[in-house]
Length: 86
Image (cartoon, rainbow, N blue to C red; front, side, top):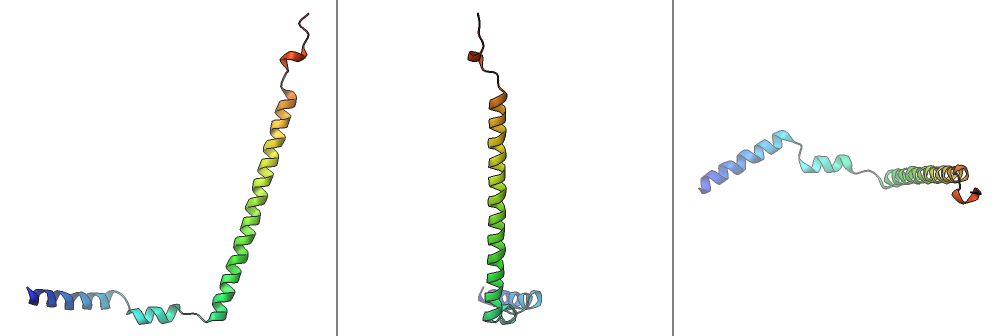
């Protein structure tokens, strides 16, 4: 049984090395200098703030339109108590 596990481990290591690059190679490609990371974070933050403002404006516009529609509908609804039955 021990021999089987050793053979399996060797074959799995070989398969892993064939399928993907080693871990240190991946890590070296992903590391960016600090100023580049700061600039990317700042740019992303500004984009998110702009998106937030856009969403808030759309929401306010939608609320204004809904309020306008409700007031328009209320002004055109006939009132039952305004008419004289006599």
